[in-house]
Length: 251
View 1: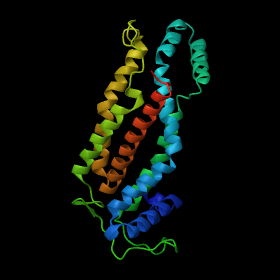
View 2: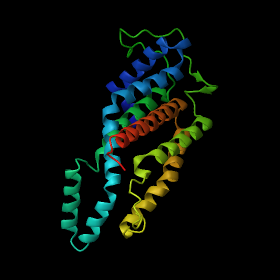
View 3: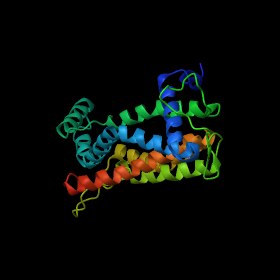
View 4: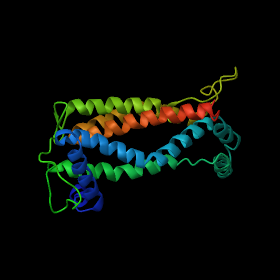
């Protein structure tokens, strides 16, 4: 079964569709572009508690990397004890290595549902329009010279650039190891740590490239949602890291 066709009959599809119609009516000249940006901000505000926790956990886990590597080296001949000690370290610092996955899992169906909304071209559908939602006289799918119902190479490239910046500023890519004259984090890494760091560095480029290809293949409205969402994420990450630094929770 085609997942997008299946999504067109779900409550999530109807909610996103009605939200876009309602926001386009409130916005200027039935602009779907403004509606998509407004919808993205609303969704991210709703998800803000989840994303805040995810960012905090990422910062804490990054700060704990030297201790985690020490435990890996100390118990390198006993993998079971090694895993136990690392989990104890995580529990003591009230963090979970899988915490950031929750936000991603929540957003995936939203992306697919939004894709389904624009798949056959956004139009007024009275059969799924809520009674309290007033539709604009005309739906304006053009935004900054782009047709949001069609594919856009330009917006796809912008999506990839913003994704690159989001990855660059992500706590996963930061180094919170104190510089106190001892061996640096890189010098103390074991083979597994070096592999993980290599993967993180490659993710700076591979993930944006993958997202660019995806953004070019889907309607521009979905790419606009992704751009707006990542800009929101960058701002939130900077604010959270500044707050944690002020509270002396990171070095």
